[in-house]
Image (cartoon, rainbow, N blue to C red; front, side, top):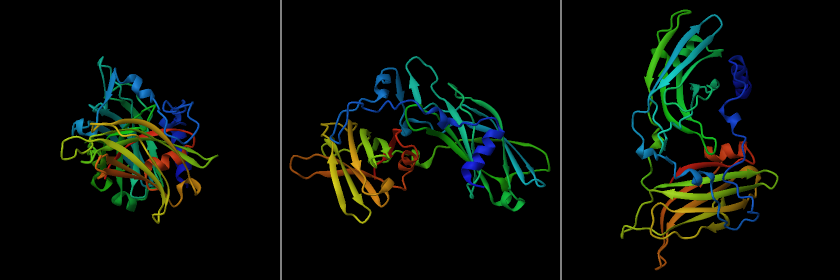
Length: 334
């Protein structure tokens, strides 16, 4: 059974024909209706209108304790059915703080069975809470007793974001070999959520990018929004700008673009948009190389860090699968 079909069957069986992604149909706040060419143009994201009232925490500001998740397990060896009940989460950490103290966390849970990854499900979204209750049951069919002993449940608690990419609050894994699954009896488990390894902010900093793919023109729009936590030079300052190269995987450069220089800051804001006409369909054999560079009047421009966009990047994959929709995400600089 194909993955998509299996998820649809499980979702319909549980009464949830649409997952959290079904809510993301509103126009993108990052779109600039007045921008029609590929030259750098200022883009004012919708989030900037909320900055006076809210602030998104960086991964380094988040606590190591991300909360708790409670779930139930039962197994029917006759029908080869593993049933997982996602009960609740408690004491989740908030990713965005509000000046008025309002809880802005809208969490849902994603679950997949490893290592085969064929069984993937997710709960509904529960709004404005750090302790959501779900009480949802999911049945994974075709799971043999041999698979039980060698499989692991991977839980991710995810914060829904209507205007950007959803963010993982915390995750945990549970080895089914550790479960005492009695015939037709349900067991209850509570686990602590841990931060993802990738949540550790890179020493060189991060770059916030928005991507949009337009299949009719086979082009990719890259909006360089801002950077944060850039490494400083010997004088303790930085004058950073971003170079963008579209090249083939063999290193052949196709086109080069760059942002303006931002003076004396390690947290520059750019809001500049660039359109890349792709030579192949959906970035096949192409790479967009972004380099954050410290401008030096002596012409010794040092590279602070870089990020690569290709078909191995999950941000790119999501954008290509959702043509016309803008998706923003932070990228660690290497």
